[in-house]
Image (tube, rainbow, N blue to C red):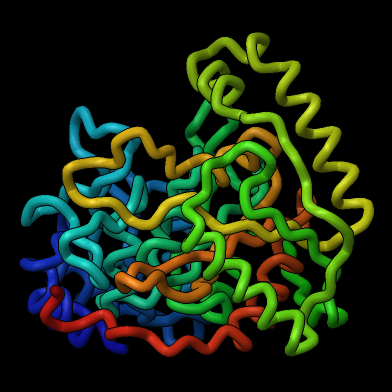
Length: 359
């Protein structure tokens, strides 16, 4: 898709979805005209997360490869509870599948823009689930890289760079650009997996769990994965995550150490840990109430493992559900290739497509 086509779609859809903070139309067209055709991503339109996204390491690497930034996407506005909304140029960001629901956060606009077809790739960052949650709720692919693999401005070490694309396969271009070494190899199928609906502590919505588990069963039946043992029970990481975020890492050290031990044991007998990406479906714009959308994601911001969300299906009310894939630390390329293999088998009958006139 050309930059001009991208800008036309944004102009048509964004007044309703409000996925963008700023659109850099003239600059993007100029950058496309000046793009070096010999570069691997020459002329590829992409979006960056939030007002500072253009300065991120990932954005700089993508631009160096010839990609063209077309705008910055929405992030939560001031005082947003649990980072679950985006606030774009046209108001609150809407979920392309359900305009009465949030796309999640904090990479809200990036996920909505990709889901609606405004861009094929958008950068994100993930400190508690901020890539994986909106990816799950918008029915797209989202990847959180291994903590520390790429430069991050987050001094706590919780946040990692990430990307949102329509499919895992489309995220390969991102990893090729941001990693100094990229040596993909197709996974030896079937991949050993451990499944957990709740990680031992989360209050997962039964229908969300059922949709994600059904996706796992489809992968088993297609020979993509095989069971590698029983599930895992972690300690609830909420207090430890909050302690680290608040600058008191010692207060969460015991929980963190015990969960690391349990995760290290799991990855001695499996290549992937599978869970629902979120314990709940996307909530309305009034807020999540007492539900912690981060309950199944932030353990891996503490532990540092790479994790991704792939579309798993839909609840009966038409809300997308994501399946979270977690791999060993540093196994980002392998995780992506396993996600590619998995997503190819999860062909879903969607209740309605992301529409040019959102519900």
